[in-house]
Length: 195
Image 1 (cartoon, helix red, strand yellow):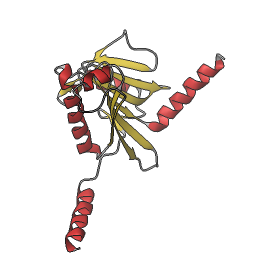
Image 2 (tube, one colour):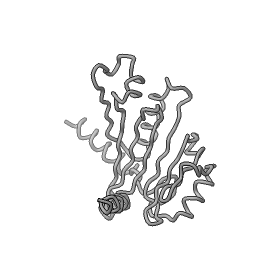
Image 3 (cartoon, rainbow, N blue to C red):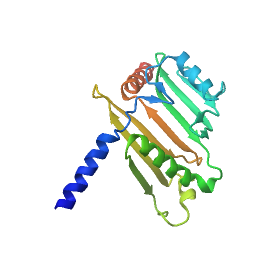
């Protein structure tokens, strides 16, 4: 009993000593920042503007530096000129290393934001450990995803998601829930107006 109490006390103390960071930004860019701030951060991180993919409300940059990695592509989503979502795509050194990259990113994000909720799902005839995981992912018969959320002082919950896409890229998304909800409502209203 004494050992259990000591273990619980150590866990409690470690949580107090190492509080988890709140999800309130992407690349140091606070949610709600202006388009000009997005451009400045993307350029400061080595990003090269991709005019072909960019559109109103979404700016794409290639080669953005995140930590020691360079992204394949990075998207910054804006609603009424306010930044609300950052999406980064990473390539592994080879396709066979994509699951390793995904697991490394999970470890790194967990080190900052705490434990996330991870899911691995396989559709028949595929199963975990069969050696065909990459084929299953490419055929959209397997899902590898992890989610983190934190609650801000105002009660709002923001999210990070990580997944392996069918193109064998790791997709990382940082999202402000309040601005995302507003963007979705505006999109729905625009879609409904055409009906």
